Image (cartoon, rainbow, N blue to C red):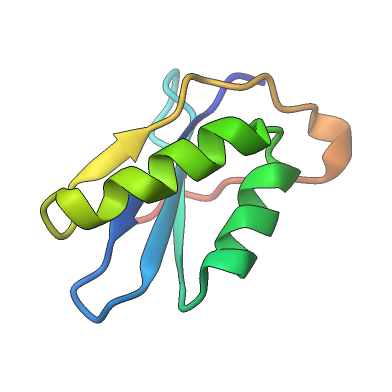
Length: 87
């Protein structure tokens, strides 16, 4: 399953992770208070550690709610990841 994963700064100071299947309207998002949790979640999506560190360094320089999208990883459905429609 192809998904896009992005991160954004929240107005309250947290970090939001957005996951979307580009071939449908399915989208999920969740906000986290600390970088360690965000790093772990992104690692579970198969995002390489160096890419995670790079994108997290960019976050302070972007607007609140602006999303930085990682290159799309291939997510195995066997991991039990399910997206539901948000909005």
